[in-house]
Image (cartoon, rainbow, N blue to C red; front, side, top):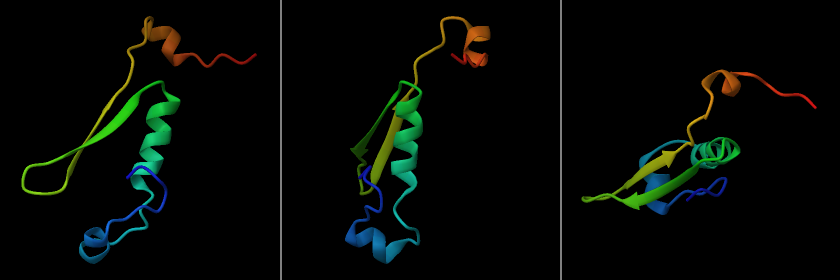
Length: 67
């Protein structure tokens, strides 16, 4: 589901798109040290969730460190 260009057969019939949205989301979330998951939803479809770590120092989180 998180692979680029992944689309279910039902998804191909019901919605437009290339199937890259969740792959992009996964890269963004993981690049920030988080995780993303999918779970089936009652009645069909999927529920997507993600979690990101909190910054220990909010000011430090805004500063870009260049080595």
